[in-house]
Amino acid sequence: MTNFEPKILGILCNWCSYTGADLAGTARMKYPANMRSVRVMCSGRVDPGFIFDALRAGADGVLVCGCHPGDCHYHEGNYKCMRRIPLTKILLEDMGIDPRRLRLEWVSASEGARFQQVVTEFTEELRALGPLKLRELNFDPDHPAGGDNHVAVESAAHDELEAGH
Ligand code: FES
Image (cartoon, rainbow, N blue to C red; front, side):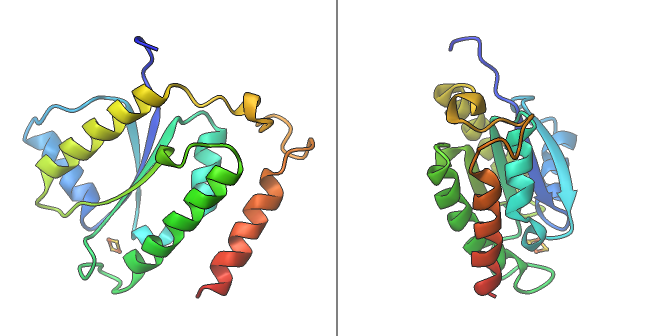
């Protein structure tokens, strides 16, 4: 897979990580251009469905970044995220997807260099893992109800997560 370039979705908290990413950009820190970012107000807003949707839509990996524990602008949002991501990894594994394709990192507004490092490392890890081949996993994005189990898994994820709050 020497020429494989992974597609990465970055879901970044507005208050810390997005600003950290912006700092990396304005400081002209170099990192792989594999990631497309979306901004959410808090990592606690990241629903596991966002992650499943991204993978279904063609992402090879998803990076979630939030404020460091104790620094969340909404006090506990990142603690919710901290509980959700390991659960989501378990669900991914159940679906036959390597859980390393989902990564959670804390990046503050002043940590442009850390953002650069995280994106670089994650891109390298995904390059080594190779492309995500959902069709080989009986995870057909064109026929979501066609005998796959991901709808049931997503539903179970929501149930488990709701029970945890
Ligand atoms: S506001 Fe950044 S993780 Fe909550």
